[in-house]
Length: 310
Image 1 (cartoon, rainbow, N blue to C red):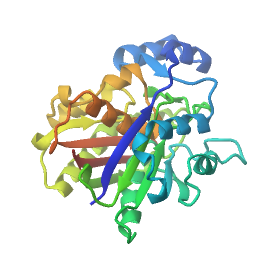
Image 2: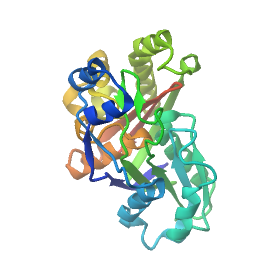
Image 3: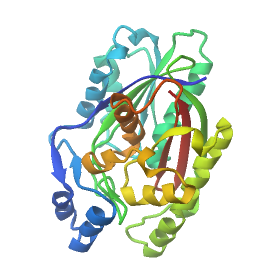
């Protein structure tokens, strides 16, 4: 059974109010009021001077559980929301391998699930490790991207991106956080440029809660659990309003949805789930045996949910 052996997080020290980002992007005062008052956004963690290798490298530095186990890593997977993250021909993922003694590992990127791709990477890592004969074999999942294009900075009327990052060691089996289920719902009819198609944006916003709920319920069904069995729900940090709507719709206590990072960190692409897991564990919100659900949605559109036992 796929297990999350360890999780580490890197949050840039530089914080920026959403108004500063909005001014640079040409957002109107009405749009900024929507983000702050309705969606609950406040500040974003950004590193204006750093590059993608710096961001990913900082997460590996923070993953102390990797030390001495580098030779056990068989796969390194960058879960990337954006199809393009750096200008050609740069390849920061492969540069990292040699810096951290991981040159022997198979390394690649997974994408096309947008901001839900972090859960895909964890599931894929477990599937790959299931075919490894060595029980010590590990996979390293990396999440985190730079906001280096306009599409990588804002989702119209929904959220503004930040540059938090996270790393996760995955094993095929273990006593740490064990994955009980993984469900995906894809709606390709919403693939398009939302900023330029107001009708598409309106339909996406209207159907978003229902499809997210469908993915959550599918993951619970696979795990043989009910909502009442969950200690926490770890969302992606796109905004607070959408999760309040979803929690109300499914009858889940909003106090058990980890929303603090929406305000203080921002939406960090595919890293949100691991960032929120790190927050939950460091704050002592999970006890051994607790079940929690990680949920994410990605433009395009992909809706994913994963149930895990702590």
